[in-house]
Image (cartoon, rainbow, N blue to C red; front, side, top):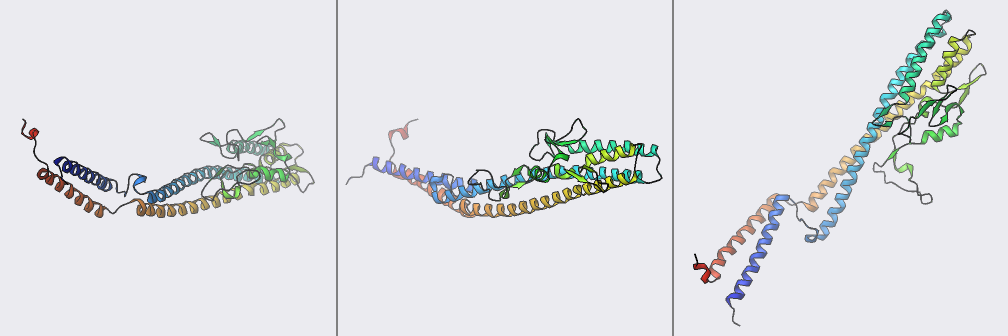
Length: 335
């Protein structure tokens, strides 16, 4: 069989193109540090890499959710600390008013001071950060607390002293939730998210101020929330028929309600600690995933450079050989 110059040329060009493609491929490996740039180059590794990238994206999303929840809890903790200070100040005024030697004029002054503390409590309960109400529970767009025409505290449309324990418990469970990697599950019947598989980070205000009514030692039924109890004490201090017995009974109810604030702060601390634990766990998982990603997609730099130099040598050798194989034509002598 006669081998023509055209056949030799075509074979040489084909081989040179193959070497050029190989050189470009290893050059990309050196530059990017990746074994492949297209999934078609290594389908199995590409599928594994996609799954790792998906898990990394989820981990990043979990960490962002955790930071958001921690930020919200931090705002709530700051507000609760302020409320605790306000109620401690109120407690001092009440104790001073309970002193049997105090005159009516002094109790009037203390009542006025309690009023200002009560208003500060109301304002702090409606704290708003970045257009989100801190103590609204699942309601973050509207003011959670209002005062009705009778001067009673209202939470998300419900008069607090009229709430039954069951209703108050239901309101206290309404929260905003985020996915922090607990494997979100849905109820097969209702389609709703299983709240045990997500993290609730809201601090419903009803759990802070209290709700419902209680019977004090005098036999009288009064509101059990802090705002209304302060109101009752203010009225008692100003009353011309002031009695130490009733004021002391109201003070006992106030002290019991005040304990909710410390419980709220403790609960926030526990939630924040749990979020920190989850963040640490996810960060460790992220490191493991990145190491796996390097194993699947990455290439050893030294090995890549050696392959590149070898491929470049072969390409240059082919070019030199081509000058000897290809016969000169008339075009090589044209100027």
